[in-house]
Amino acid sequence: MNIHEYQAKALLRSYGAPVSDGRAVTKAEDAKTAAGEMDGPLWVVKAQIHAGGRGKGHFKEAEAGEKGGVRLAKSVEEAAEMAKQMLGRTLVTHQTGPAGKQVNRIYIEDGSDIARELYLALLVDRQSSRISFVASTEGGMDIEEVAANRPEKIVSFSVDPASGLSDFHGRRVAFSLGLTGGQVKQCVSLIKVLYKAFVEKDMEMLEINPLIVTPDGNLKCLDAKMSFDGNAMYRHPDIATLRDETEEDPKELAASKFDLNYIALDGEIGCMVNGAGLAMATMDIIKLYGAEPANFLDVGGGATKEKVTEAFKIITSDPNVKGILVNIFGGIMRCDVIAEGVISAVKEVGLKVPLVVRLEGTNVEEGKAIIKNSGLNVIAAENLKDGAEKIVKAVKG
Image 1 (cartoon, rainbow, N blue to C red):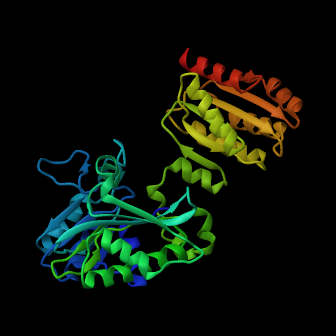
Image 2: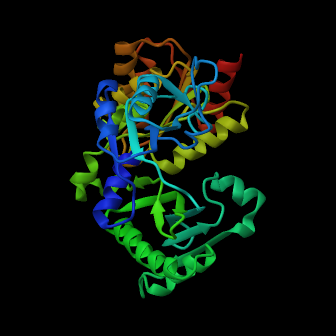
Image 3: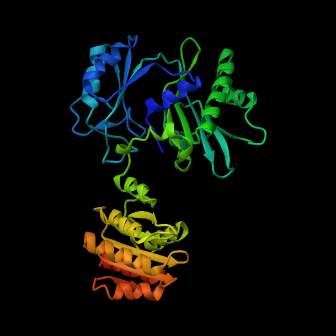
């Protein structure tokens, strides 16, 4: 689960991390009051969307000379006008794709003088199964670009959970960032704060980009991005309330409400599979035969008829889907339940694209009989290879 910058900064502030004063607004008429509550003389007006690259992004149908999603204002009136220009419009960045995301919130923040921009992040390293720090002197830039062109500028190390975090880790970050004097002590304190927040709130990623050094030598978190382990949200009702459903794919949001594991992709063949491994194999074989999967969808081992029906509805709601492949291996899952769910869904939402069904396992003959006797134009497949070939042929002609 992701949250907005203003929410991440509020969380950091509660742990004692140095962040600027700021106000979030959802209505243009509130922007002037919000800006007036801060000292100035410089205000930063930031569009709040779940995507990076906002400063370099552009608004759809932007007027000539109009800037991106992060702007500097030199008066309360100017800050309010900038907020008005951004709210309700669609911001396109390199992370949103060409569709962009609508800006429903604006964060107005006190401006900061910057002497240096640095990069700092904590994340779960899957290879070592530990929390890792990533630090770079190239703050304010896309870390992927730095990794590709100047990998020597990135320092990364993990924390052994047996011994835990120590001042040594903070000093290692400080020295890798070229910090000196009192900045080292500040960095050690900041690392402790960030690590504590990361562990206590079950984060998956915490990125400070940039972490700045002010002209008077102090550290400040100028931007913040956080993501949390969705499976741990039952432990953090305070974090769960920060979820902004308008930022999520409607299909993925609908799937989560029915406990379906769904991820939208860019292809043309919708997939309904039980089991994550089989789902990935199904996606791979679709690509092998020359097409692209439109989604990853694992209905799980204990899916009901109603759950399968909802899964089918989600797949067919994607306008890019030109064909559907149902691939079920019935171990815990029964093939007749899947068949009943598919038939129920087809009758409810209609079938406008080719549908190939491959069933194997528990009650497979009953499942095949249900499909065969349904009277629907469903293509049966004997195995995964046969199913992939048939759906790709049906879609590609």
